[in-house]
Length: 338
Image (cartoon, rainbow, N blue to C red; front, top):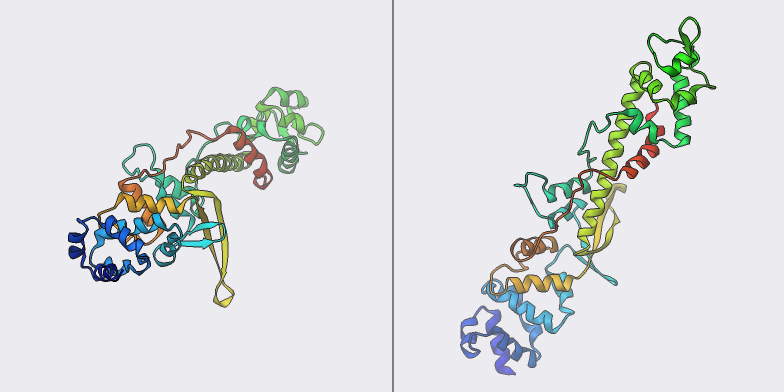
C-alpha cells in the first residue's frame, strides 16, 4: 500500500512517466491498484490538470464509474452552474435565452437558424416574426368573433357612427339600401346594428369609411394573435426538444438583494447529469478538453455536442394553428376596440 501511495503522490506531482513504465502505460490498470488500496480519494485532480491534462478525463471517468456519488464532488468543485437538490440536479441559468445554446447554430441556413429562433422565443423582448397577416378584416377577425365580442363590436359601432344620418351614396350596399329612406339616408341604431355586424358587405363599406381607424386596430389585433399563436407552437416545440436533456419546464427563484431589490433566477432540472458528464469524459478521453476548462454544464454540453454529440433541432411550422389564432383574437378583442 505504501508503494501505491508513493505512486499516487508522484501522479499528483505530474510524474506519470515513471508510473506508466510500471503499468504498461495503462492508467486504468494503475487506478485499479489505487482503488484496491483505498486511495482514490487522495488523487489531486486539480494539480494533475496542471501537468497532465490528457489523463484527467480518464481518471475522472474511472472514479465516477466506481463511485456514482462522485458526481456531487464534480458539481461542488467544477460545474459552477449546477445546484444539488434532494430531487436531483438543477441548472442555474443566466437567463432563459441560455437554453438556446443547446440548439444547432444554423447561421448558414437559408431557412432559419434554430439557435436564433429559440433565443427569440425565450427572450424578454416581444417576438414578432410576422406582420401584415390580415388581408380581410371581416373574414379573418369579425367572422371568428364570439357572440359576446360581436355584441361589443356592435356597441362600439353605435358609439362611433350610430344614431346619425349616413348617405347611401357613400355606403352603397344591399343592406344599407334596404335601411335607407327616400332621400338615400339611413341610420345605424341599436335595433339594426347586429344586422350590420353580420353583413360582410356592409361592414367592409364601414371599414373604408367611419370605421377606418377601428379597421387598423383590428388588423393589429390579428397580427398579435397570429404571432402569439405561432410563438406558442414554436415554444412547445422548443421544450419538447429540451426534454432530451431536461426534465419539465423551468422555474423561477427569487433572491433578495440590497435596497429592497430582488433578482429572479431561472432554474431547470437536468434529466441525467451523470450520463451527460460520463459522455463528455468518454468522448474526450486522452485529450486536454477537461471539465476544468469547460467549468459549467452549458459549456460542457456545447463542447460535447459540437464534437461528438448532436445539437437539438426544432421544426418551425409554416403557420400557426388557426384555432389558436382565433382564440387569441377573441381574448384580446376588447382591448383593441378603443
